[in-house]
Amino acid sequence: MKRLTLLFFTTAVVASCSSKQEQAEKQVTVPLVSTVKVEERAFNPVLSFTGTVFANKEANLGATLPGKVEKIYFEEGQSVREGDLIVELSDEMLTQAMIEHETIKKDFERVSRLREKGSISEMEYDHVKAKYDASKAKVDMVKKNTQVYAPFSGIIAERMMEEGEVYFLNPGLEPGYSMRSGIVRLMQIDPATVKFDVNEKDLVHIRKGLPVVVRLDGIPGKTFQGKVDRIKPMLSTTTRSTSVEVTIPNSNLEIKPGMFAFVDVMLPEIKSAVVPLRSIYRMPGTSEDFLFTVVNNTVHRVKIERLQTIGEFVAVKGVDAGTDIILEGKNRVNDGLKVNVSNR
Image 1 (cartoon, one colour):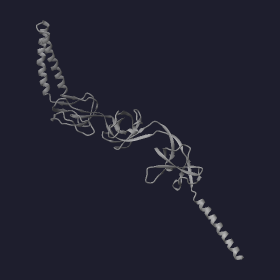
Image 2: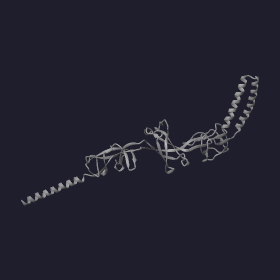
Image 3: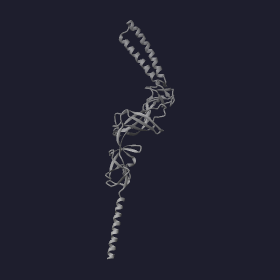
Image 4: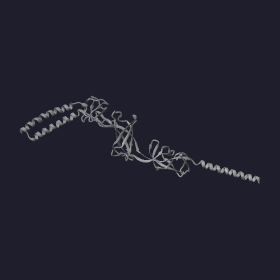
């Protein structure tokens, strides 16, 4: 009897210990997490692109007629003003045209006197006058082609020919710049222009006048402010993108055409749900982002889309403001799991 009682007592003790151990294990398997509420904030979305610096204006200066380059008055890098004489070409053709003009001018003066006396017909007079007008226009045309003037203020970016060479109408093949024929390349780089491509998906957000921040690889630690000036009204049929231009000041000429640029276009202010960066869980091996919300101590995994990083926070789409999300302990939970919440 004593042996039976002892056996019963031992079984009861073991059963009691097992029950307590199971309860303890159940308590241990319920993770302890901390949560925060999703906030709503106003911010300016930013679209980022890469681009290239170009001159605000660019022209390859030359003539419509071939000729020997007699004098180039400016070196590469020198500044010129609108109307400055840049190049002089040989004037053999001008001399010939002026001699012809002087001869025809004498004929015209003679027939003019005869016309006043009524000694010639109107037809003869009109014929000589037409030749006189044509010779005068020829002199003006040749004169324009022996002297090349700056059409706008800027710098001589490149001397494409040297004195003594014979100028022909050959294109200056410099990829990315003007392909027209010329003797010197004139550029206006104050202000400078930054060009970048925008695809059809982002183009709906871009409009003239939007503020832009430009950073340049060649000038680290400095930013330049500008606005969207021009949007090309057509898309490439191969890339499905179009060119957008921004003008930025360059009074000290430190910005050079050809520089690589990072362009941030500041879009109008919007409101969005904002969460701490460290609350976002990225599925390993994917680019999918999630948040773990907590409703009645139960975890729910919610897929989100990142809109923009704002310091240590991220504007997101897919969750509402005021929702409780897990901040600490997200790596220990799964969808549908019960949790204990602290630091609400």
